[in-house]
Length: 399
Ligand SMILES: [Zn+2]
Image (tube, rainbow, N blue to C red):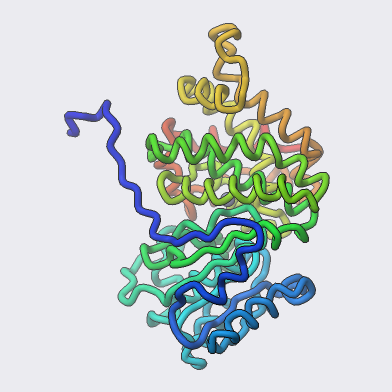
């Protein structure tokens, strides 16, 4: 028993060098890197080529004599087979390090590929949860560079990677100390091309990483600072970035919020909202992760606001609500009120689970999947949800 349980006590370890700011991609040409040959991991879409980002990265590497190979198969919900293939390519081509270029799915895949380039067997041998075997990772990972062209997951400054095994409907997060990127480049100019709907979904993903990190048992005074600032920046500027993607000030606010929410991931944790969302998008891969979270969020945070009111009073203050003027019983509810207003301001209040093909009769299966595959995050909740409450929460979110 910790005799100082009521006093702050925490660990902060974020070993990623971050280059943040408009125009900073070009420093890839001069910043210390990790060898002579890079595997560049990008999505199967056309955007990294179309917008010239891939060529810029290859040219910057080439200008300093670094060779590169491209792996371009990553799906929006990255799958196990592509981790296996990417790692094989990295080994065959004797790559010294791995660059994830793009959104969260490309960077997460780069992490998992970097891990499997160094280790035997199948990636799922090392995964904890679901049908993963939970074996220790013997050889770490190749060095990872994250160049983010979206603002959503914060994955550029955390060790976590989420991969789906489609055959078993498992979408599971994993990470080891070596899957922290060694270098992250966050250049908001690369985000000007993100379409409005993706800006919206990714921005809310960052928001919920911060909000969940704030109510998780793992929260600390340090993660609280990152989380509060992240939520405030998104409340201020996400709607503007959704409306006008060319607004560099709004893009920069959202990018900063995203990186701060990555720091939250590295110093606190997500909670069971993410377990529930992973179940939705494991069974329905057409659901953008952030859209899933938005659809769950009102019911989820309403339930927790009743169970842990003190944290929610703080959350209401962070969101600028006049907590002290409200009736005592109303104070914990003000965060959800602010969240609802933000969702509406961003035009996301029309999202419906039924529009993504979710059926009401599968909610029990989804709730069970959330606990089977991502049970760990339930232990981060300050209130232990029962199975019945998870189903009820999905039912309340269902439209
Ligand atoms: Zn997320």
